[in-house]
Image (tube, rainbow, N blue to C red; front, side, top):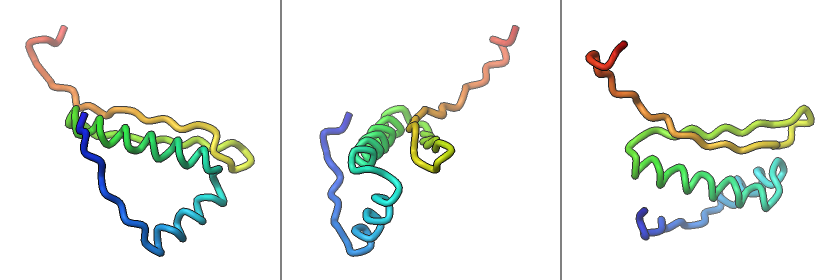
Length: 82
């Protein structure tokens, strides 16, 4: 993993977006979501693959589950087909 941290600047738009997200998520959920996104980005770079982030909401419209997964392309080798 890279030890370099991305440099972020807080703009007025970012602050507005954060306040909008706080309507949907708790501070802890936002922290967990940001952590998951950071780990997904690092894995995508390491593994040279795409990543998927899924957020499942309950019937009240509140976030219930975060899941990140790797989308790795399968290498096709005709000689290995049964």
